[in-house]
Image (cartoon, rainbow, N blue to C red; front, side):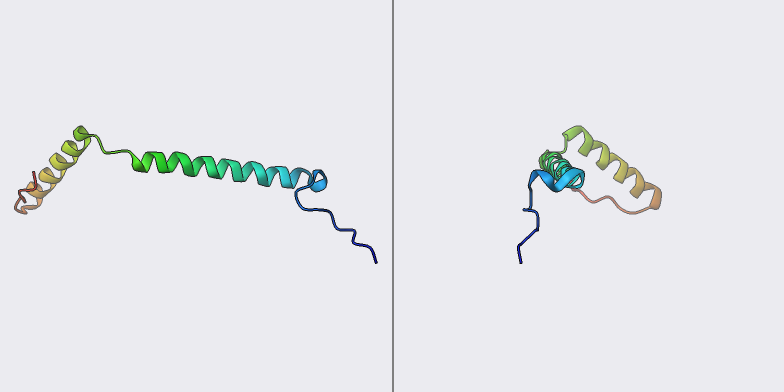
Amino acid sequence: MSDTRKPEGGPSDGPKSQRRLGNRAIGERLRQMYEGVVDESIPDEFLKLLEEAEAAERSESGQPETGAS
């Protein structure tokens, strides 16, 4: 008996293989972009806005402020 299977990754894999390779490349690029965003620091202005929003929320609910600044 002869082995009639196609070699993996060969040109006869067709559009499905090409689509898989394209999807893999897109996934890798998206992961790289996400990691770059996650590694960025939060701007001081944004942190200040968050602190102000939390302080306003605490004053509305009657909770005492913590001196974290």
